[in-house]
Image (spheres, rainbow, N blue to C red):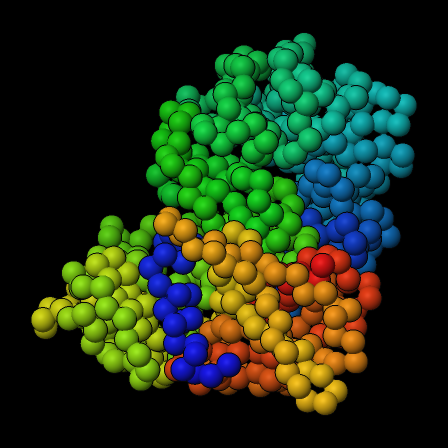
Length: 592
């Protein structure tokens, strides 16, 4: 594809109508390798350094731990093999049971004590029984357990604080799909909630390890996570569940379910926490799509502001993780994505100064860019709508954009497009890594506009539809005699409202004795070559025949050769591209 042909495409992909709304998070995807049906993730301080680490259930008896190095960075993964099943629905439970400052794991049948190096040793075991919940049921500051017995009963096991437990009171037979511990009547004592399928039962704690009679509330059966949070500011925990919120009454019972406003009944909550730092509970919910989440900023009265959509990896597990991963005092979010085999880490940037915005990759909505890559920022500019041609100028529509990097050096960015509300630009080549500030310069007046995080490699693949991940790609069939036949990868139709694009079918059987090559276009690949690029389709590696500059400043491309995948025929697959181990957003390709 020639640079001349591609210039209109650049205007299309980084024009005002393509990219999503300004995110409040920096997105970073981390790949992991798991067996089928695994991939649940959780956080805990497993080495006692007071920083939350990340763990992924990578197999039936295998964990992959990524220790937090500080500042949002993580060390190389540590794989731990254990002699018991680690993960399941609502498992493991993360808690320090022996007071050594390192979080341990409560599995279905016992305890795994952290050694601090990413490995675990067996602690107390409950042969044939199930550890159902953990909490401080006698108020001594030590972790206690609710254990469901194989016989059908259950019991309270009070912790000694050294990893050992003693059985005290018998508890009602559980028969519950889920068990939660929280203070549901706001008396400072841990209570226990049972999800019984169609109703919930709360047993109010007496504070010495025993519980009062059950209090039942009819509530639809919940297949998903059931976060507990005070969403209406009355000090009483509420249940944030599939389809809506059940407000706590303060006596262990709950009000009827209130649906999420305007979102339907199939919505379920991934996390409930204060992401905006205003002391009010916010929600992260799944909108039914497989590669996005919705943030609902809480008003503190049980209602929420308009949802903000944020893309993540494909196939999100519930629950998500809310933890301060970079030590800035703001809760970040992590989703584990089973289809793309990634952790999507969303670093919270919600507390920026009023009016300041984040620049994002022009190819994806990741708020992390690389030197020489193409980026976009939504910000009032006062400029008239103007598009440029290569070489990109540093002044367009009467304005310039100053990029001041972490080393203090200021440079004017090459500009591709400006409008009254948007600037598309190329990150200056010598920009130092780290946080950079951005300022609009007009008639000699410099106005601080926002910032961005700069990293060495931030691959992004251009897509024509973010919702459907339709790649802006080309394909060609090369016959044995050298004849080249173009193959459409996508099909677009323009209406009065917008441009609509969908995947075109590309049956592999049509290749015959020829070879099909596909070219993906992106940005953020600076210094790349085919040797440090990997690509797979449907989990099967494919050859990368070229990776590097496309010819237009800031634009990169990757060429792959399709193999005769008989097992992939007649399906749609995600394309996984990684550069130096950093994964790009994942487009799809249609082999029907």
